Length: 149
Image (cartoon, rainbow, N blue to C red; front, side, top):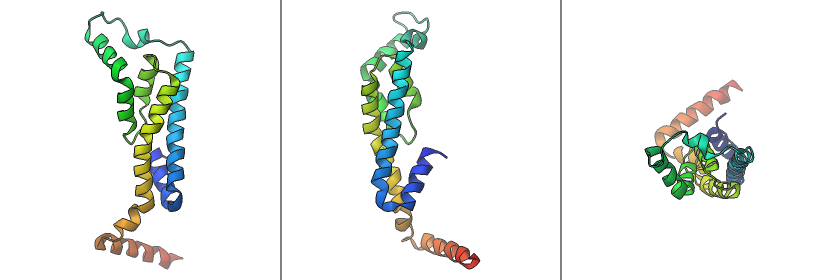
């Protein structure tokens, strides 16, 4: 099951604990990103695999220099998207960003989408049920399932 659905579903089942689910999912993503970074750097995988045989002033070398300069900011932006920024974490690890820096950036940035998804799960259905068409549809479904019991 995708993390987004699991987070929203858990928050729907226990709406009062949405903030705990948010923290757990953000910590999980951060620990995973830090572990990947640590593993890649411990194995000695360096940027020469990442760069290949590009010349000194080539476009790939320029892009790599930009990533070195703004890599953690880019990682933060990617971590705010609903999915986990796996490839960006690998690129940061290969370019030498430390595991603790990657962990801290991913944790901080993942709080944004995790909070949004948990709040949608916790309060989305009750708020949507206030819309007459959706409320009647929910009541019909509930009546159909209630009739089968």
